[in-house]
Image (spheres, rainbow, N blue to C red):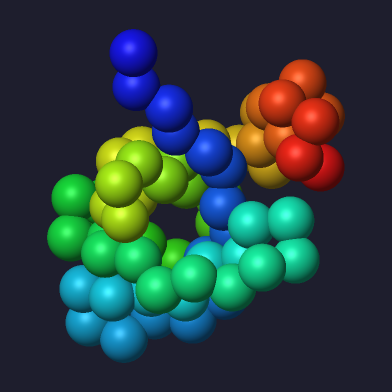
Length: 68
């Protein structure tokens, strides 16, 4: 089973980005996402952004997982 959590991109520097997950900042790799943008939500797995998600879905996932 894989676990991915939603995170919002707050800064981008090449293939690396800073994301916020429930108030905690982390550095992640965004090389798997085409043209990542500050302010968008991604699913984070093992330090990599693996897919985009919209804000509504991200907040729903956070609420269901008890991390929002």
